[in-house]
Length: 238
Ligand SMILES: O=P(O)(O)OC[C@H]1O[C@H](O[C@H]2O[C@H](CO)[C@@H](O)[C@H](O)[C@H]2O)[C@H](O)[C@@H](O)[C@@H]1O
Figure 1 (tube, rainbow, N blue to C red):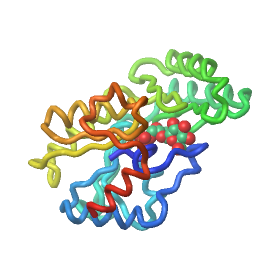
Figure 2 (figure 1 turned 60 degrees about the vertical axis):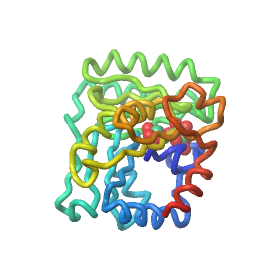
Figure 3 (figure 1 turned 180 degrees about the horizontal axis):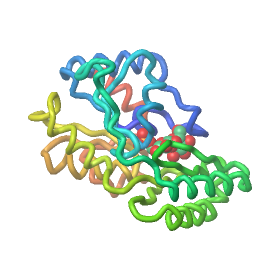
Figure 4 (figure 1 turned 90 degrees about the vertical axis):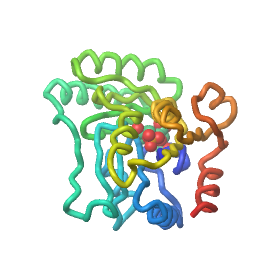
């Protein structure tokens, strides 16, 4: 499942999210019931996800599938390294610094450094959307080949190309304990549609979270209006 807007309520800034009481226990219960076949598939870095769930490592596909780290139920702590792809190039670091500096001139626009990716958020300053898009388009030219822009909810991200949430599902489904199961994927954003496409191809179940006007064109076969509804449903299953 996806995190922001699916399991977690959306917040004003990237750092202001919290899983809320009981969510970690619920996920661990579901993970145990599925013999470890539960993964968090997110645009966040793996390290940020770990910080949300202290003392426990879930299986996480981070940075839209760029990073992959098996959880402690399927690989003991210490044994499970994060696969993170290529290290950032000098051009990437230069592009990132340009964007960080440009954000300082736009009140309410937030820069998020995610290691091998970065994002510019305009949730608190929607009037700057066009400038944010232009800054990120210039950054893409600056970092060169091997990267792409991902527009999301009040955000534009610059990420390594070559992976998305659909490729993350394929990689997970090729290995135990996921292999041979019917996949279920839940998400709330355009970047989650890649997961739904793959899960639907595998005759699995796909669920998009969001109000009906936002989810009308989704590939997902089922819809729920909010993260709170999703958590209630997951708790019932747990
Ligand atoms: O794939 P996800 O787990 O859904 O992550 C997508 C991006 O989510 C975060 O941004 C979004 O959530 C913020 C906190 O609620 C919100 O302020 C922002 O407007 C949303 O776009 C995160 O900051 C990004 O790094 C993720 O890629």
